[in-house]
Image (cartoon, rainbow, N blue to C red; front, side):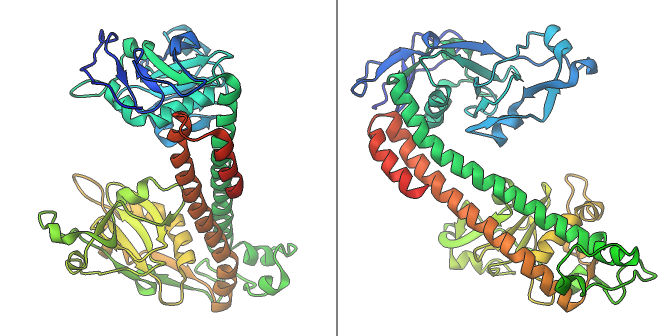
Length: 462
């Protein structure tokens, strides 16, 4: 739908009509609706509720059993049903503040600082004052409203005002109009988009489970030395005999399985960094070579790097001493902050915010992935810096790594590599599903694509 002229908003600017592209407007727009749809004041089909933060000066208001949604909860779960939160309040906190306990299926929109993040409550919860919250009537499917807000993310920033912190004020929120069909059609649209979101969530949960399995296996074999300790204590084998027999019978005087060695990580992998080609030289940028910064890892839900926000040219690559790192390189952010971790599934160049580990010797990249995760405390202990903490390559290379026999590492890789490959496959599928959802979302919201056509397309994918 065409955008009408926008005006400067504010606390009392509800008379201004500011429509979005698809199905949301501040004020009633003079725009046509798809056949069978109509522009409806959101306040007529949903009750608007504010949020509040119980006083931080009263610790007794915190740590209860009522999930409390803050901005970090919304940014980390954008577009999802949320069942738990980072912080919790309690009945005392609710009673002694303006906070409200909201029912399940409340649609929560971040309205200030980080505008436009949407979550739906999966149980009774409260929110901070940084949210506007809608409790939907029977005429409005809450997930349909969620998808409207997701489709109109760009417009939500138009509705926000402020020079320091962009904010959607409550008069604007009260003036929201949605373009909506009857409930039956809403439900059908939600079913189509929800099938994609459900598959994405299923893949995410599977990847979480797989990561936990890889982490537990590494810890048992290479941190706790479980099989060897079990043999020493006369316990029954809990691994296949072909694997069980690979582990030594005893722990040596150094506290490791007999016959294993302690090495420095810098002796086992090639540790390199990166750099940033001059941003003043346009010829260094806009090519087809992936160039990573820690920001590219910060948004990853799984330890798999498939793409980067920015790309450089061949000339730009020539400015980076470490060059193009091969597929399979393990990437660890070394500053601002330390600890983002991923395996590159593409050839990639990196900036100066990384320790990159090229695994061409006896330790595989999936082993180094798990070793790095398990060694994060040591990584932080070796960091320094007055402005922000950073670990240098020189301080990183001496960190100790316990190395088993070749057969033990071969067995570990045989179990863990398929786990990582499945995680990577899940991530690729998630991106494909998300691309389909993002293609269909605005088109379904605007009536451009009919539900039956979208159902066919989604059915072929899921």
